[in-house]
Amino acid sequence: MKPAAAILSLLLAACATTSTPQRVAADDPRSFAPIDPNRLSLITRTLASDEFEGRGPGTPGETKAIAYLAEQFRQLGLEPGGPDGSYTQKVPLIRTQLQKPGTMSIAMKGKTIPLRFPDDVYLSTVRPVDRARIDNAPIVFVGYGVTAPERQWDDFKGVDLKGKVAMFLVNDPDFEAAAGEPVANRFGGQAMTYYGRWTYKFEEAARRGAIAALVVHETAGAGYGWNTVQAPGGENYNTPRGPRFRDGEASGAHRRLPPGGARRRFLGELRRRHHQCRKPQCHRQDQRVEAS
Image (tube, rainbow, N blue to C red; front, top):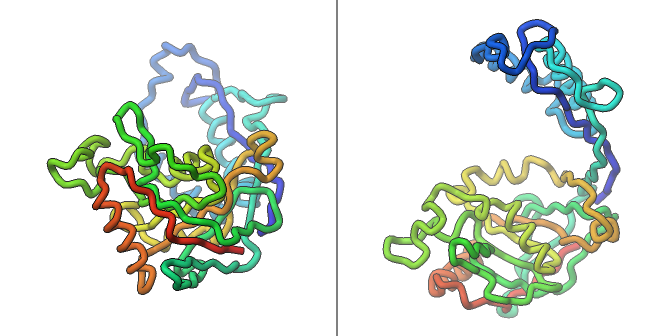
């Protein structure tokens, strides 16, 4: 993988709006102009067009998108909120990109299951290093990977994740809960909370010292297909987060695994164990992962 430094430009503007470039008071009726659906549609179609090339950070498409939005702000009469009278502010950004497919395998009960990127597993990292390697690290299955004291729920139960790979299911702990189970409707049923998002799960795994995090992808639970997971092609972005991030000690490669073939049996066994222990107090470590 190749880390690269980039600059993310944030668009900043003051609050007053008018139909012409002039200042009006916040309580002026002219600032309450109705939203025009046709105008919103035009802006959306323009930014989503091929001309803007996806608007990726640090790309020519982003430069075009910023210029377009700044001009829209100017036409609305918004006052620049950035330095030197501009609509933008520079922000440091880390970009990583896998240069070539790595290798990964999972060993369970004496059998090694190879995983192909991106068909069987999707790999990504936000560590600013040239290579991420995981050598024979134990996998700890922690249910849905959620600790929510305000909902009286903890999938971790004090398990030690330092130096290990955390594996969890996508969505909230009550996503598949049947009526009468202790967790039923504790997280709003199938209305996913932030606890169900992969971003939360990765963050929680990093906080607990895991060297990597593995989310078991299922279309129903995620709300999108495997092709959406694959879409970034090994590219990722993040903002620098202090000395731990700069020293490369933040959590390792993020990865997601779809069910299929031998992997389906592997994941089926994990799910069976989890449902046997709906009050998550059992954590399994009889699998190990290698990746480079």
